[in-house]
Image (tube, rainbow, N blue to C red; front, side, top):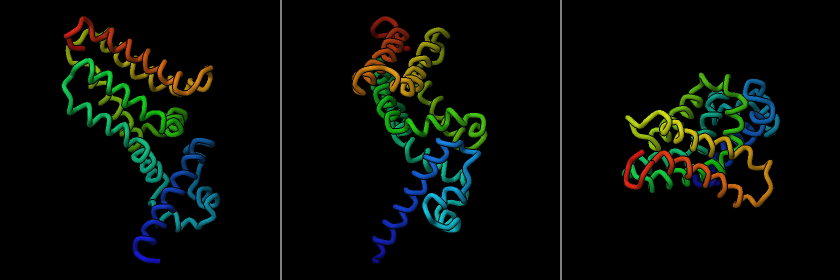
Amino acid sequence: MGENGARKSQGDTRRRIQEVALDLFAGQGYEKTSLREIAEVLQVTKPAIYYHFRSKEEILLSIFQNLGRPVADAIAWGKAQPRTLETKRELLRRYGAALDGTVPLFRLMRENEATLRDLEVGREFNDQMTAIGELLTEPGTPLVEQLRCMGALLTLHFGTFALPHFEGSEDEKREALLSIAMEMVERAHGPEGSKV
């Protein structure tokens, strides 16, 4: 196998470790999942896991960084834009789209919040939520309007988990959720031309 083939195989193994770990973390909890169990499901040895990751926390962090990249990209985009209502609408669109691919990860984080809070992945997640919240609000905005903008963000975040319980197509449900979040930000934005 050539150098490119070996690199691809290592990348595939790393990705498979992440997929199995996410399934196990989500299914039985982060604390209750061991590297031995991950290796058994993959039918590899524990040293094969250690070749790619130094610890269970490093696996989780790599999953977060891979799946959370669209959220990080949305934040970077938002920071480079003027603070207008249209920018905030687009930020909500981008955040909503990013959430679609990260539901298993965010479900894991929600269900294991107490455990993950003190890990690097918990800090990175909190930093992302704070950054998006800051992009939706402005310093000096009345508290009610700041909370309304944070409510829009949380509506998208937690509403994504509730969508399977409602009737309608996936696109209809996502569009309805985004519409509610947009209305909250638009209301917080106030009269046309003012800032949030």
